[in-house]
Amino acid sequence: MSYAVRADVTIALVISAGLGVLLGLVLSVLSVLHGLALSTIVITPSQDQRERVAANPVATGQFAPDTAWPLYPLRQVRADVPRMWREFTTRFRKLWKWPAPVAARVIFFPLSAAAVLCLAVAGLTGAVICGLLALMAQISAAAGTVAFVTISSLLRVAERGWCAVMGAESSCPRCYHVTARPAYRCPGCSRLHRDLRAGRLGLFTRRCACGKLLPTMAVRAAWRLTAICQRCGAPLARGSAAIRDVRIAIIGDTSAGKTRFLYAGLDSLMATASQDGVSLGFPDESQAGEVAGALGQLRSGADTVPTQDALAAPLTCLLGSGPVSTLLHLFDAAGQHFAGPRMHDALGFLAHSHGLIYLLDPFAIDGIEKQMTGPNVTSPGFFHATGHDPDVAYVEVVSHLRGSGVRCGAQRLAVVVAKADLLSAGGLDLPGESGAITRWLTQMGVHNLVLSARRDFAEVRYFAVASNPAQEGKPHDPGAPLRWLLGGRGTWLPGDPLIRLAHDSELGRGRLRRGGPRRGGDLAEADPAGERRDLAEDATAEVRG
Ligand SMILES: Nc1nc2c(ncn2[C@@H]2O[C@H](COP(=O)(O)OP(=O)(O)O)[C@@H](O)[C@H]2O)c(=O)[nH]1
Ligand SMILES: [Mg+2]
Ligand SMILES: [Zn+2]
Ligand SMILES: [Zn+2]
Image (cartoon, rainbow, N blue to C red; front, side, top):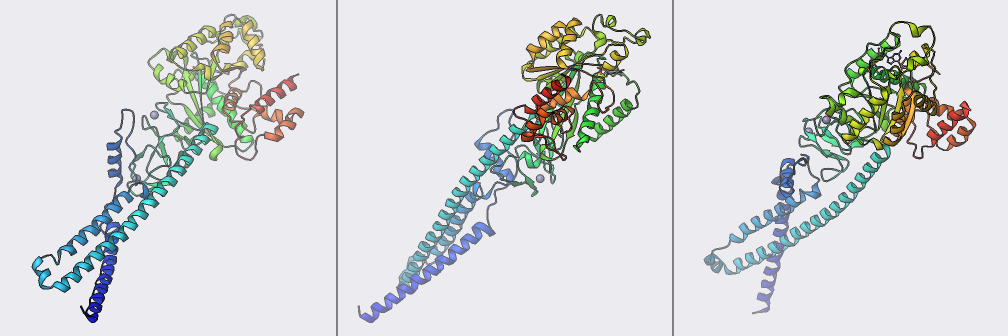
């Protein structure tokens, strides 16, 4: 072969190869464009859900994963890369077959050889480009997955930590189910999202199947979406699962004064809260109306009508505002219901309550009339107790609770001697301090209660209350048992008379400066060492002494 021919062949080869590279580039661009944008296979939320259910079948008592768009590196990339490859190989195969007939190749020999070379180079170029792109996509997807898993794990740990420190939970007013993770309803399509934690559907936000962007994590969703009970579907109070949840049950015999105590206690709590500008509201509007009516009646000074029926749902109020507020649920659970058809309902709440208030009707104590003097005692109807011996009633109620698996040992018990104002009118002034009330009850023969309560509960304190409207400095404050139980869960009202007492005392001033309650609308923060409680007790004892 002459030099000139060799040069021509080389030029032809170079041109063919050059055209091949160009063709390979065009093929790759077309494949990427079609594979990733024009004819892409979109993994929809329902397809993603189906795949996950197929991989991990839903067991009884579990729910299928939520329908929201999965994060790109966690699912869609696994559809896009193969799609891009398929686009490239299909296009290349079509081109490869084009100069296929052997006769044509022979007839157009030099040209067909150049075309084959051009296609081979195009295929190689395309394969290298698509291969590199696929590799890069897989590497960044893997890195993205690691980053997402790390961040979502950290977010979950942070959320769990917040809930543990704050005592944040959600409790259902209908079925009393308690959980740290309620469901949320999408405001766009009403679809339920049962697991809104940070994860494969989104770290800080997720896109619902309907396209609506939702916040993730209970601490953020609590204020923007409607929380829903996982068990019965009832809507939960705003802030549920993001703020402290305190559940207190009021138990006692018929006519012991539970309902009146509940509203009087609430009235006192409102007064204490408003002194320091802490708001106290009712998330449920119908309950707000109910409370307004009951408080109106109480404040008018009229004798409240005895209520036979306990509350069907707990009364829920929101103390404070923002992330350090508290949802307080007060449940009026009549003692006789533990033996009746509503037992299951009442026990459902009691099993999850943080504190119990046992209302004791002093007029039901045997021989109380002998303790009283004064003109009122002889007036007709003064002794109007309709209940049983409080000692017997207590033992019955608590044995019912324990028999039903309610963990009394984990709860605080406030034993509240009710109707202290009526006793005063009869010339019997009850002491105000817990130890003195215990001694008085023992003297009155209420031994069983005093002895068993100490054993049955984590902590017991005795109160004497007059369920009357709130008044500054009034004795027998019905808010005191509520504040004590709230304090046990870390919610201290800045205006709490006990705290202010401690604050004013010499002892209190020195110690409160380090961790004293904050002023200005927020509730005081959790009190891990119970320091303020001790202070208040010290100060009370000091003032008394
Ligand atoms: N004066 C006064 N009356 C009370 C007090 N507590 C309850 N009562 C009255 O006792 C009756 C029964 O009270 P109620 O709260 O309905 O009892 P419940 O059945 O335990 O809910 C009502 O007439 C109340 O007005 C109190 O502390 N002082
Ligand atoms: Mg009642
Ligand atoms: Zn939606
Ligand atoms: Zn429920």
